[in-house]
Length: 272
Ligand SMILES: Nc1ncnc2c1ncn2[C@@H]1O[C@H](COP(=O)(O)OP(=O)(O)OP(=O)(O)O)[C@@H](O)[C@H]1O
Ligand SMILES: [Mg+2]
Image (cartoon, rainbow, N blue to C red):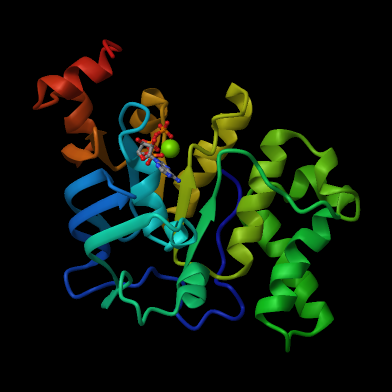
């Protein structure tokens, strides 16, 4: 794990995740959620500490993505979606109608299952969000930040000679790390990953896992994964969901070694 993360040159937050009085990056209280009349999350309570990797696991359709997308209000774009309860990031309840959603999404970045680089050069993939979010930046400063963010995402040495080539012509694993670099340009504090390795080979997966372990030094990381071994390898804490309920949550070591519920035990042994 080569690079040491450096502070974003524009950072006003000194790089650490927003912290509420109790030292948590995210506090979820009594969250219920619906798509139309169908309830998909039930009374979820959860605390995610800053600078940890929290992994959401559980069978398909149990609400992992739905909860993850609540953290940056991505579900707002779904008309039928409704939520009750509170989600605090720092001291703000981000479910409030007064929340500045654009500002929230800068604070809480997201990477998806399929890498989604913009159809332009590697360099411009990072230049675009930088220019949009920090319009007063000088050209030389922009270039410095781009190089630094590519280094922070452990991809710079692999693509440094191809910065002005199309981002669509690098491998899937490299594209995913490029998307992570792009997310880092807007100086987020919490990073959300929805099955980021689902389309990747084992070596690319390992590179992303190493990167996540490195990123948690500076950011708070929440990852959804179907890969139990991945959660075992990188997560500090794990939340196990089943049919919209948070069934069990705790330190990864304890949860995997001695699950308290039969349901988690069955899930871990591949019985459903
Ligand atoms: N846009 C939507 N409109 C209606 N229902 C939805 C929508 N998105 C998800 N759902 C439903 O909400 C429930 C939870 O879905 P969600 O995507 O959160 O599960 P998940 O645990 O992430 O599943 P997977 O592991 O397959 O990604 C499922 O029953 C799903 O069918
Ligand atoms: Mg999902």
